[in-house]
Amino acid sequence: MEEPCCHCHKTKQRTEGEYKKLMNRLNRIEGQIRGIKGMLEKDAYCTDILVQVAAVNSALNSFNKELLAEHIRTCVIEDIKAGKEDTVDDLVDTIKKLMK
Image (cartoon, rainbow, N blue to C red; front, side, top):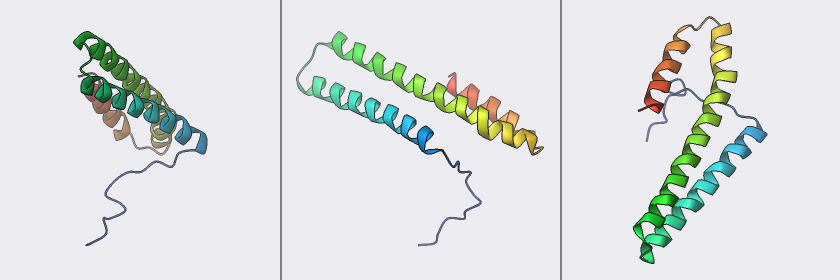
């Protein structure tokens, strides 16, 4: 199988602290999802499951806010300083997708 071109997708080198913080959030969300599956398997009442789903949605929104803020502080600022003005358009498109 042919290796993907290293220039086809952007990547982001994260600090160890940023990586750990984001992974901890995702691990908690993953645990919440497993909890919801368990509730369903145990025939939990609908509204109890819905409340847990709302908690997961909130946790995902918090994850997105954290990641977006870090993206703006690093990637966007660096690109603008380097004269890559199209990064602002990419950011606007990303925000539009997040607000659907």
